Image (cartoon, rainbow, N blue to C red; front, side, top):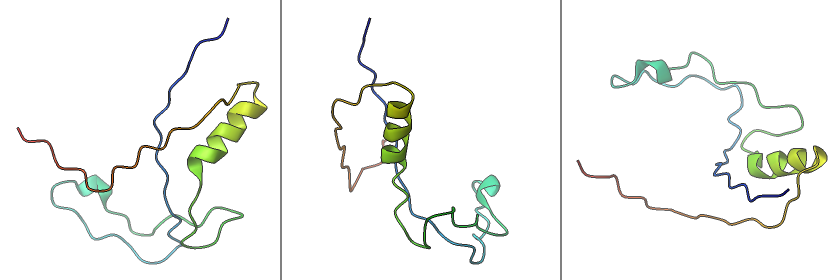
Length: 81
């Protein structure tokens, strides 16, 4: 039996190991003393390709990859309360 599986996952860039993020008064848990190291095989400021890496890993595990749908939302407006 097969059924569709939808996954919404974002991507990001590597930051390298350079400095820290200033504390955020609204969310202190976001502060970092040192940024994470650049993952092996990537250079600083590289696009990580997380959706592709996940898709290929799922294929290796036996999943079928039929298509991708890019949801490009460049200027999202915050929701009003």
